[in-house]
Structure formats: C-alpha cells, structure tokens
Image (cartoon, each protein chain N blue to C red):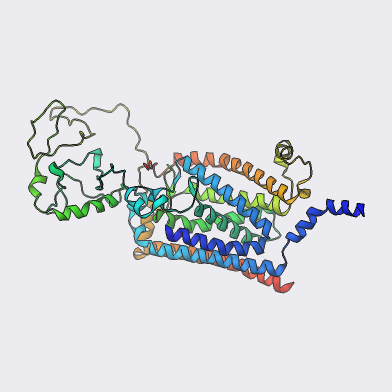
Length: 239
Length: 244
C-alpha cells in the first residue's frame, strides 16, 4: 500500500497532464470557436479599414500630432507657424480676422502632405475666424517687434510678437551670403514618400487602394484560418 | 479607440473560451500569462525607447472626450487591449500552424506561426496608425507609414514565443543552449529541483516557461538591435519627437 502511494506520488505530474489533455471533440469545438473569433477580428479590422479610408487618404493624418498643451484657463489653441514663428498677439484679446481670400495675411497657407500637425489646430481656429468680419485692415498692418528697451514706441493697435522669430535677423541687401563650411546631408524628413506613405496606397485605384488592401489581406487571412479549421474537422471525422 | 478596445475585450472573451477547450485549461492560462507578459515587455521597451506611443488621445481637448489617454485599462505604459490583441494573434497563429503542419519541426511551425501573425499585423498596423490607436516615432525605413522594424518584430516575437511554448509547455524539452543557465538559476532557486523539464510539476513548468520567455526577450532585443541600426541608416523617414 505504501509502495502504491509512493508510486502515485511519483507519477502525479503525469496524471495531472493526462487530466489536462482535453478530449478530441472538445479540441475541435474549441478550435472552431477560436478560429471564428479570429475571423471576427479580421472582419472587424476590414470594416475599420473601410471606415478609415478617408483618413488614410490624407497624408498628414498619420504624422499628425495631438495639439500642444494650452496654458490653464486658455481654451484657444495657438497654431504653429512655419519657421518657428509665433502668432502675433492681438490687442484686447481680438482674434486674427477673416481674410477675403480665405487666408489671413502673413500666415502661410495650410501645408498639405508636409507631415506637419496643423489640421486639428486649424480646425480649432476656424470658428473665431468666421465670427469676426471687420478686422481685415488690422491684419494688413505690418507687425512691429517690441524691443525690450523700448516702451510706448509702438502704435496702440500694433500687434506685438510673443517672441522674436527664430529665424534671426534678415541680412541686408549688401550682406554677402555666408558659405557653410560643411554641407550637411539632408536627412530623412518627417514624412514618408513613395511606398512609405499610406496616403499613396490609399489614392490608388480611384481612391479605393486602402479598402482593397485591407480586403485582400482579410481574405488571405480568412483562407489560412479556414484551411486550418477544415483540416482539424477532417482529422476529427477520420478518427 | 473605444470601439477598438471594446471589440478587443469582447473578442478576447469568446476567444479565451475556445482556446481553453482547444489547448487545455491550464496550458491556455499559461499561454495567456506568457503572452501578456512577453508582449507587455516588448511594448513597454518600445514606448520607453521612443519607438512607439499610445498617448495620442491623452492631451488637452482630446482628453475631454478620451480620458485616460483613450484606453480604459492600462498596464503601465501599454493598454491592456494591445496585449490581448497580441495574445489572440499569437494563439490563432500557433493553432493554425500546428494544425496545418503537425509533423514538421518545432522551428518550422514557429516560423509559419510568425508569418501568419505578420499577416495579421499587416492588416492591423495601417488601420491602427490611421486611427491613432498608436503611433510610430522611429527614424527608420517605413512601408505604408509603419516601420519595417515593426513587422520584423512581430515575426520574431511570435516565432520565439510559440517555439518556447511548444518546447516547454507541450513537449517539455530541454534547451541545451540555456540548460546550464537554468540549472544555475531557476532550478537552483526557487525551484530547488534538478529534474528534467519533462518531469517537473505543472507550476514548476510554468516557472521554467516564464524564465525561458525572459531569455527569449533578451535574445529578441539582441537580434533587433542590428536591424534597428541598418534601418536607421537607410531610413526614409526621420524621427518625429512625440512632444506629448
């Protein structure tokens, strides 16, 4: 009896593994459920791909960053200006006015496909632009940069920069162009071109390239999973 | 984002029920534990290294609509949904490859599982980056706005994970390359057992499995480093500092 107990003690792990081994019918049912769930995941992804085709068409969308942190109590987002410039502060908290051409003067047109994150910020700026209509002249004024030593020299309505443009002082007409000692190789930009860009894929086949891509991949995955399921069923029938 | 997370959780529940029957209750639990820990380690390393980011929806105006960065449940820096998605992809790839070619070697089956998982991620990644479920910030060679490194990484992780699972949990084989290390570390303490892997108890086997996964993670990092350097050199897109 004691020997039997020792023997059982020694083989308990094998016994637990036997218990662990599920029966074949259970395995087949489990595999079916697993593969159906995986197929549902594929279908979900294909539908998500179709729904996000318009997003994929916009090349800047993938590279877009979330809007920067706003100071507490300030809801308005400050848009990024090209070249590191800041948006001028308008007196009395006025908004940058709406321009007849659709673009405020002094502001670069909205970059498309540059990889900059301007879409969300421009969208946040639009409602106040449309609200003010009488500020066209104000926007055409030449902004005067306030020097730290100067006080009261600026016109009362003149916009002031939050900070000087980062590009530095512009060279005069007689200034000679400074030769760079070492020409740095332009590294890869913050955007992708050619095969690297999802937007290019999406624009193919009359703007249905991305939809086709997810559909073809989804079908390929479904076929692989179906083959596995069919083989498991066949083996089940054979045994 | 919410739809993605909810769909992942619901599909996971269904998938888990099936996997429990197909792989066995305890083995499936071990697979889930290993998959979540392994993917968490890989994803956390990617986030800490500035390669990947899950925080797109976490700031300012978006935060009003998507508190907690858009995802509901986080495991540190990585949302749980990402780990569960990896588990589902790895488990279905493993089961499909084991069923399609049961008589092939472990490594061949693991390679096929890796290939199927890469197929899954070829579908998942473009949809994810388009919808900002996560974003890539690495200076690397990109294909349809996803770094090539990501797909190599998916193949390698699934390949290593399924190979280690099959070797340890299913066949209980020794791994000669790391046997000495196992004997000196995990089998000495806390197991205090010199037994062959096949003869270990189930909980001890899970311990060995997790230990081997840790070594697999180190091997993964070592293999990925040269890929990262090469792709850095031939990069077609620079690094975009996250800024959030």
